[in-house]
Image 1 (cartoon, helix red, strand yellow):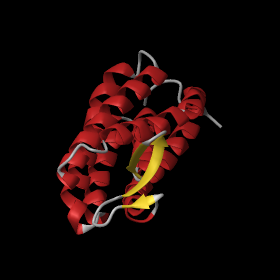
Image 2 (spheres, helix red, strand yellow):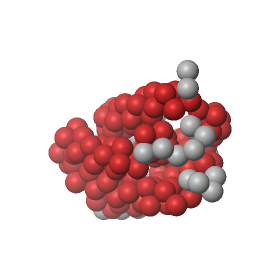
Image 3 (tube, rainbow, N blue to C red):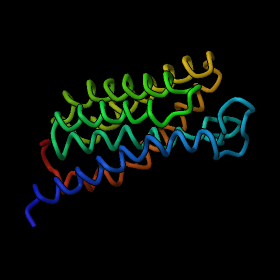
Image 4 (cartoon, rainbow, N blue to C red):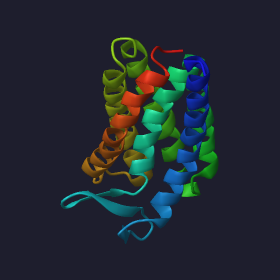
Length: 183
């Protein structure tokens, strides 16, 4: 099978997983955690003594998945995924988190796009790591500020999302074989 067909299949799979990460993150934050704060998020440990809202792992993965969509299908598909994901985020989020979820998603994914796009030809791994770092910081600050009016969970948010990004490194290395050049 030609690499471009394989790359397209990987891109479509990444797009579907990316879109699935939106409801998954919203569900996690409301239902899964070692502690669930009344009228607040469910929390998971991300480092010794540091908790984060449980959706962080899905959000970290979403940042990487969007990069894969762009790598395999092109920038227009990447932008389309961001817009569709933001709409989906506002439709699925609980009423108290609609603004925070939609705004954080939209702004963080466009921050990821802005960093990833110029770096992708210089090195896929560098582009994914740098863009994901930018996106996860923007997502964390925007979401926590709008959702809870506090940055109390900022360290946990950043660490939790970073774990998800770091876990993707072996898959990103494999992606270089499937989609050696950006679409």
